[in-house]
Length: 112
Length: 243
Image (cartoon, rainbow over all chains, first blue to last red; front, side, top):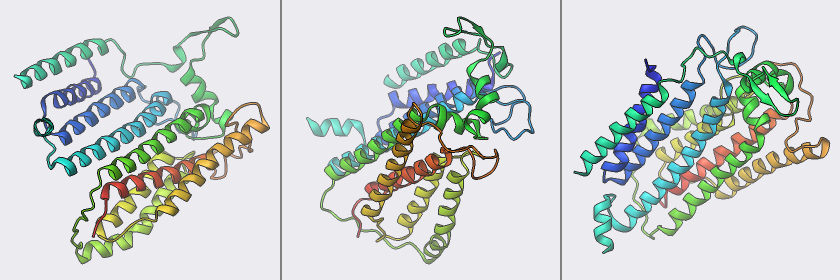
């Protein structure tokens, strides 16, 4: 039985992949990339879960903590994801300023 | 046609990843149970990396929040690289928006009185909250990155409420450079005092107190200021020239 955290994160990855392949709108493609990013982050966090564990902040009240390493890695991954999103969105804004559209097909037609 | 192919591929990815991750245990892991080979002592050690961090992290770094201990102390060099990536993204957004900039000024309408007054009232409190998050990074959940994002969101509020508002580029640059210099300077002092970069050279103090954990709060305040000014710079570049 697959735990539903894994199912949800894998579904996010698959949905993001579908959006990136099938959609023609640049903004929607960037949203799809962000969804894949979120799915991977959720997968990493849920692998580090320990049953009955709390957030790894040691104040002496809880005996069990979850794994701190995936959380630290995901903290890095979120920042890198934000950087990639910002660059991608700025390029989309620039394309819209130059061509007046964010549809990939029309941009390709304008180039020819 | 393309949609059908994409849907089939997505379902295949779902099934393959689902089968791959079905065997990985969820929740019933005992972090103490991992054994790994230690080449220095030439024997199997029973202390896995997360168990070591959870057991010794507070004594070795003085930080109550183990995630902060990992991010700033054990992997401090990695965090320096991460901040650099964010800086590169900020400059990249600025240059891309500059290349595509046409001399056309965008007409922006004034927001209504409620938004203007509320943003004027809330601005200071949001900055205070962001500062609280990154000052207490070693005690509570949070740290430099979320704190910086909160500070940037307060500037975004001002950009949305006032059409003529512009953050001073010079002061943003000064704040960002000073924060980066603080980070690298603290690391270099560690290199001088002890043998390695980002050595925690200050006394740890009592855990769960604000002034504890040595250099970790200093580095996280620097990271918070740096992330805040970089994200504000990104927002400023994306807003473009407005009238």
